[in-house]
Length: 211
Image 1 (cartoon, rainbow, N blue to C red):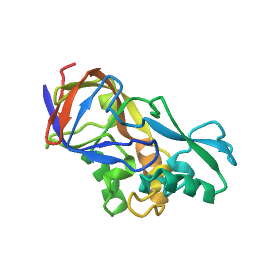
Image 2 (cartoon, rainbow, N blue to C red):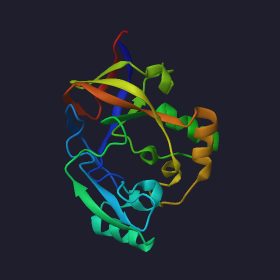
Image 3 (cartoon, helix red, strand yellow):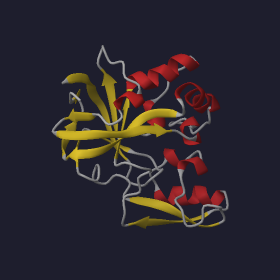
Image 4 (cartoon, one colour):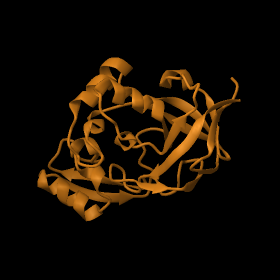
């Protein structure tokens, strides 16, 4: 098996589009990290997305707060009515998202300023091994062992305007999405399915199973 890197951060997002919480370890269940995106705000009026989730791309400050009342107030400031709903896992797609620092560093180098990995809201953020040379499409269909869990890469993550918002200030930086769209086909990070549930902790290695 080829060493891909090691886990530097584990994050779950209790409410979709709101701030995440960093974990030192987590059990990865078949449907992802317990507590991840187990609630979401839905638009009930004042917006074209009525009946659908109210996302980070709808407000640049949503990602900065974990306070549900604050999030509701932010929506109200834009004349949008929302309500919190539970009872499902509100993923954009697959249950686990993974990003390597090498991909983030590419954007940082191109824009000549450091990029915080939290801008891309991954569940797993990994420091790449020295010989890491993969782009996201290269890993599609691959099986990755991390901790005692096994993940299968579904496909790359296509990015939207929400990635232009600074994860600390909320200030937009349109150059981020412009670069990712023009030079990376709008892709950064990969979605993964859980092939085998297990535990993962920071410092665990990621290894690519032979194909």
